Length: 147
Image (cartoon, rainbow, N blue to C red; front, side, top):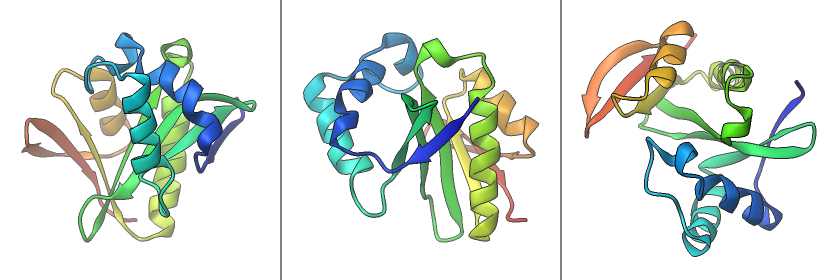
């Protein structure tokens, strides 16, 4: 499993649209996106410098994206949204490990937010040493102190 995290580009619009229009992938996030909403997401979150999200490729194929951006003054929010074809293969675990390493390099706390029903995300947060930090805006918040 060769994963690459990279800055998004305009060529990511089609695979990103396929991902964000997939009801299963969006189940705990938002209603599935239209192509226009996906384009706005790419422009607003994937293309700025610094971006809020980064593309994830497996063997040069776009499989989803990771969230990596400032959460507050001491924390970075991390997360991942993967196409369902790539679920259950260990990608989320590998991405979590990579994002934890990047957070440690920046000496920042890391935060994972998810809806309370999102059991797999909560499981991964706890597996990697995140502590439950309460609920904010209806989302469960897990925090990993800087290492």
